Amino acid sequence: MSTAPYRVAVVGATGQVGGVLLELLAEREFPVSEIVPFASERSVGRVLGAGLVVQPLEAETIQGFDLALFSAGAGISREWAPRFAAAGAVVVDNSSAFRMDPSVPLVVSEVNPDDLGGHRGIVANPNCSTMQMVVALRPIQLAVGIERLVVTTFQAVSGTGKNAVDTLLDQARRVLAGEDAGDAGPYAHRIAFNALPQAGAFPDGDDHTDEERKLINETKKILGDETIRVSPTCVRVPVVNGHSESVTVETRAPLSAEDARELLRGAPGLVVVDDPAAGGYPMAVDADGADPVYVGRIRSDPGHPQALSLWIVADNLRKGAALNAVQIAEVLHERGLVGARVA
Image 1: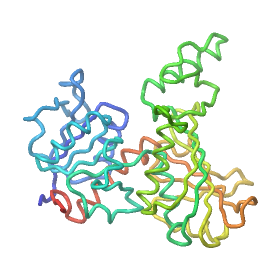
Image 2: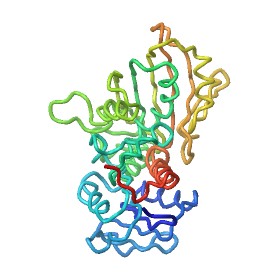
Image 3: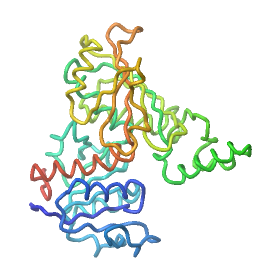
C-alpha cells in the first residue's frame, strides 16, 4: 500500500475538466510528490502551469503512479484505465466507461464514500447532472426514503465541451448583430436564445437520451436502491457553465418543507439558498466556480400529498466532475485505500 505523498497522473489534462483537476490538486493541497499530465498526441510536449509537460500514453510512461485521475472520454478510459490499475495506480475515472460495471464503485464523496472500500483499482465518477442531484437527495433518502423522482435538467453548454461554449458565444454575437446564427455546432439546432429538449444523444430504438438514462441508472446505483423510479427530461440551455435542475421527490414517509429545509441545511456539500420572495434562490451564475451544491425553492408539492419540489444548482465542471474526483482521492488517502485492492 502506498503512503503519501503520491505520484499522480492526470489523463486528459488539457481539457476543460483536466484543467480544473490540476487547479484543485494545488488548491486543496493534495499530498503529491509529482503530477504528470497526459493528453492526446497533438498536445504531447505542451507545457502547462507549474511547468508540467504533457506526456504521451504509452506502456513505459504509465508506470509508477499511485493515483490516476481520468477525464479523457470513455474510449481512452476503457483502453488505459485498466493498464494504469494493472501497473499499481488507483484510477478515478470521470467518463461513462465503468459507471454501471457492478465491480466498480460509483461514488459521490458526500453520499456513498463507504463504497470505496470495495474498489479493485478503478473508481467511477458519475455524470455531472446525477452527481449534484444525489448530494441533495441523500439526506432526504436517509430520513424518509424516496419512492419516485421527476427531474428536469437545464444543462449548460460547457458540459458538451469547449466547442459548444465557443458556438454559443459566436451565435449570440451574430444574433445580437442582426445576423444569421450560423452553424449549429455540436447541437441539432441553434443553442443561442433557445432551449433544446435534448441533452445527449438518442441511442438506437430509445426515446430517452443517454443523459436521461444516466440519471435513471446512476441515481439508483449511487443511492443503493433499484426500486426508486426516475422520470427525467434533460434540456440544453444557453448558459455557459452551471447546471440547474427541477426535482420533485415523492417520499416514502411524510416530510414537510420546513423539516426538509432544516435537514438539508445540515448536510455535507450543500448550501441552502431559499428566500424566494426576496429573490433568494440558487442560480447558475452564482454556482460558477464554486464548490458546493446549492438547493432552494424547497416546497411541498400541491399535486401529491407526500412529495417535495427542489431547485438544485452546481458548477458542472467543478463539483460535477473535477472536484468530486479529487474528493474521492482524498477519501482514498484518508482511509488508506491508495494502492489497496479489495477482492
